[in-house]
Image (cartoon, rainbow, N blue to C red; front, side, top):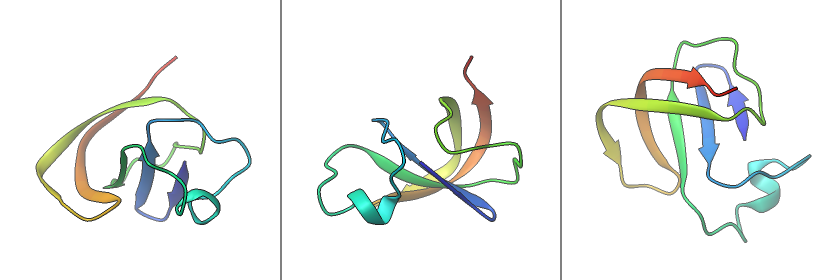
Length: 72
C-alpha cells in the first residue's frame, strides 16, 4: 500500500490510487507496517514476508521483516 523510508505498509486488499490516509477510517482488513531495508519495493506489489521477532498489537500492526519476496 505504502513505501516510506525504511518501512512498508502491507494490507490484504488492493486499493488503486489511494493512500492509507484515504482509507484508514473505512478499512477493516489486516494491515501491518514492516520495518525493512529492502529498497526495490513499490506500492501495489504483491509480496510474501516473514517476521523477525514479535508483532506489536497496534493498528496497523508493526513488526520487523526478516524476509520479503515479491510475488510474480
